[in-house]
Image 1: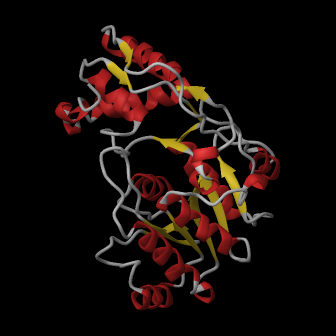
Image 2 (image 1 turned 135 degrees about the vertical axis):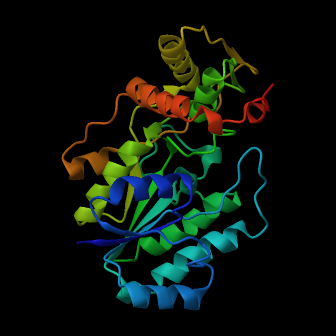
Length: 297
């Protein structure tokens, strides 16, 4: 059986990967106490002792609108990556979760293509850390870079991530509040798990791929879909409001390189994915702190 090491197993993506891949692979998902990715010797010793076929590197340090970027964000992300990458003789291959931020979100064109990479150096520390890793991967034979854009699903931080935040508001009988409309390319985490499985089981022809749904959508549309789903389940009407006029810069990508190589892939219908996630939050409503949903108002 293929032995899989998932880093960041306690995080949003890592937790979903571990839950959904354990039945198919031998999965190792050590906590940070069990494996400190910032400690080069500890990483070398762990890889030497466990001899993994595939590493899925989902661990990352980032910021959001409630949490400022730590001053050592760049150092942490690069150090975690290189502590793994420098030990390529100790594993078969590595799947690294990069980010659309590698392209520099300040001037990101809609439906960005892989060939647009390195047109600009990202100005923010998070994007720059991913850019540095991506430049190294270009010269690597055992590492593939999956650039993620808007992934959503169970276990994400519902206090700041839009789709989960809106689902939780609706579950708690609160209005859905948007700061500003924007077009995003959202990928359901269950799709991400299946796409990751393809890269685990197949040899990639390229070193980097945009991993997204390829169907950009305005978040006002998503908010209305969540309100519809909530109405179906609860019978309540959920109001949707927008705090600021205008539309923010689009954050989307072209995924044709990935789909061509895979021979196609059928993504979750977006409203079905919302319905699935809404049901998960409904079943776990006791975990939602309504006070944490009010920060936009």
